[in-house]
Length: 368
Ligand code: F6P
Image 1 (cartoon, helix red, strand yellow):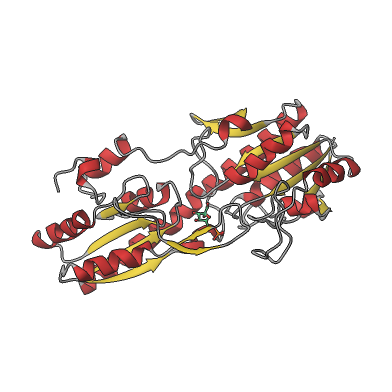
Image 2 (cartoon, protein in one colour; image 1 turned 90 degrees about the horizontal axis):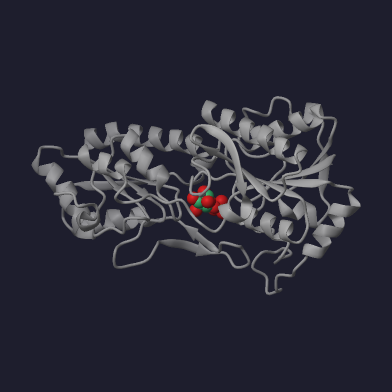
């Protein structure tokens, strides 16, 4: 077999471990492997590199992706640079097919999030033999219990919450830590619980300003003169929208988020809680650096499983991790449906049980 691999969408720790897992097990089967550069751009523009054992050796600990990635290159709506130019995106999928054939490829492994996998499914529907591998630090893909990258992002976010604790306590301040998490608040939820946050704000539980203020005041009355608020970038008020930092025209997901934490700080100042607040926006720090042991292990298993699916010619499938074992599902069933936090879940109820507030007493039913 001759296979192609690409990594698409936002990067995350563990991508290299998947590339290594697929490549090593493919080479051991006697296959040839090429890696496309910058996601689907490499497929459309015939930009690729042959992958040998020495190319993937030693990369398991490296963050990012040795292949490069793009969250704008879509073969079905291709925008030539500069992004945001007036030129209309073009459907270059036939070119992608021609390149695939010209290279003598038998299959493509697409490693990415919902966007990348949706494109993979579209290509598969038109006849390209594709296998998908789910990736996102947001951990919001349905059909897999967990995605690689999430655990690494969580480690960074939890460490940040731990670190602001001591400074919040020393200064009697409210520290607001903003995590990534566009439509799903898994990072904020787990880092908030693990780091002992007092209020956790999630996209799934629109917040009421008065309930955030009440939680901080309540702690103050109980002698706790500092509070830690962990907020996902996609959190929004019950009467309002997400905080959009900028709009990038021509990008499959044009909204760049960030900055909701400043709104929470302004709210606390306005409400005269009598405590100063400070903001830490973690941003891409959460996506960088070495993957955790769990992510390396998960990503390697995903890579090996993807090669197994190729060997069995089970195309149109995505590898997944369910109930602590590697499995696979139809890509079509996995995309377009996000796995989000359920406000009534045992996890949220557990957090409430140890005194965490979610900024909306009506939704969470907590007494504070
Ligand atoms: O989807 C993963 C994610 O990390 C989101 O949480 C975040 O909003 C987005 O990527 C940021 O993407 P970019 O790298 O394009 O700014």
